[in-house]
Length: 195
Image (spheres, rainbow, N blue to C red):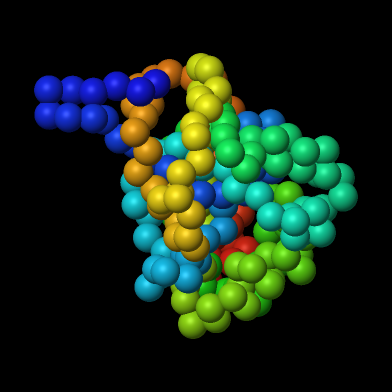
């Protein structure tokens, strides 16, 4: 997937997200991300409509994922290794919905793998004056997993990175069709978006 052009190296934006969630997206268990932005960002912005998913992991993820989805944890942990990491998924934004009723975010529980407590702690109560964005995304399994060396510039509490990789349009296995994504987007708007 690495390539260059006459104007220099090709890069593709990547969104940092839990490795277990990358597997949930590829397995069809969710098509939703909830984002507020990292500590080093004023707010979360959709940096690109098409991007790779950069897997992360922390010890707290085990208690932050509902028990029925714990089979995803070792997969995500293996992808977000200490020295190398493995990228398996690209995402295309189908819809971005501002969560205007964060007090109703528990009503989205059937659309993701996180525990309600985790969503409240890490997505709602974290930086309470910042807007929560629900991204409805189409997951695309890369044609072949990409192994990258972890670099210091990959660190930090921020949402987006630029990776020296090309992700050709139209490549990879698509997980959900438009009708499913439209249903998810409508559910988010009805349950927690603008009334």
